[in-house]
Image 1 (cartoon, one colour):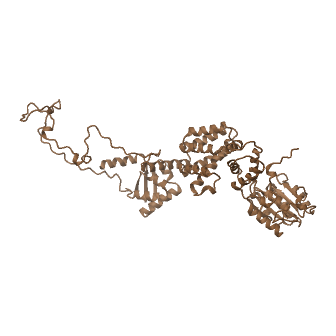
Image 2: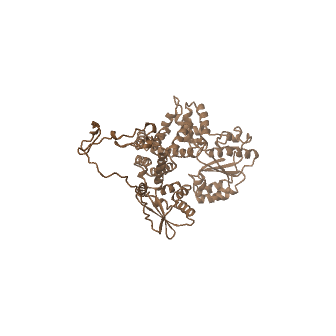
Image 3: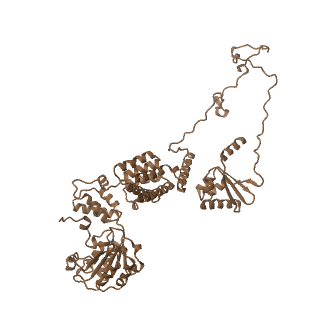
Length: 570
């Protein structure tokens, strides 16, 4: 029979001092052991691999130890030596013994005193798996057990424990172990076991363990007795992890809206036998990290990543808007839900989701519309600042001049202005029947076809006063003169609502009605939503002095009509 023992069993702590990440619990238990104020029932709750069963075993030894050392079992007295094989410590798996008959049998045997230890300890693991009848059978014994009996209940699902059980136990909540503490313990174990592995690979294992020390040791066991040093890249390959590089490449393609590159990244991951479900999960986790870097000044405390990865995440946070991040998170959640139900076409689910991230126009929900509006606002702001959407500054173009167009007088410097032409320099054709006293030169022969000269004297053209535009508004429908002020007031509380009003017009009608004509086809729908409608109503009330009834309609070509009016006024 092989004597090999798994690492998580071999390196299970035997004293409270070796338990990492749970100092808030071990310090209390050690003080209770030293003061001999141990309770009769404990409830250990927390996620898997955080030390619940380990602390239960240490406590069961410590309560019977003859010479405890600062609250830890001495490991030398007869009680500590017999703790591994004694019948006075019962470990019950509630997932296997869920019925009321099993609890009744336990209740019948609890009256017997211990044979080797000072106290008889019952460790019930995964206690939330017991049925309601089993919990009811345990109540009275748990509340008033014999003096020699002690119960330690462990669970990962605290919400499934009845309130009657919770009120009879002393509860301790186990926290997830931080990646730094897990990495420190893994380094110590790998050195003792002669496992050659880099710190980067150990940190990768620590992050993947998600706070569970047992999971970290199980992953470290994959590299047991390796004949060469395990790097982070090799650890990523063996553990089946997609890796940050693949996720960053996919994110870069989404930021650039490069659908072809995104599909190429997914195809490469699929051909390398990467789990697409893991890819979706890591992509979702990376989006969460980007959101943290966007809103937190020092994200290193909230993100399990290296400093170089955090800098890359900050770069992505500047490229992706808030609306785009939320839209991508919703798509990832939808993809994960569909992947959990799908057996086939898992690759298609991932690819269609990524295509929607790159091309928002393929989706028609509210989140997509807000994302597209945000992109348009950003492009308009960049163009107003003289920058193209690609990031290059716009150079002002000189106005094109026609071939025969004379320069404006204001464009010609005074000292460079040409002299006024004399009468002799003006070219024209002399009619044959017209007397001429001066010399005849070839300069006069410019136009081949002679043109008759009108005998009537030339008079300046009379100035025509431009006529004012007709006021098409009826007495019952007057233009809203404070339209620009209204947009500024609306923008102070909702920029999207203000952008919907830009380029439109407002009219005051009889019956306390304010009618708006807008050029954006989605503006009537968005401006009727709760927050935007309230913002518009408050701004109108401030300007008009009363709360009108608001009507909004889409009118195509309002901007063109305004331009035409302005040109006629000029």
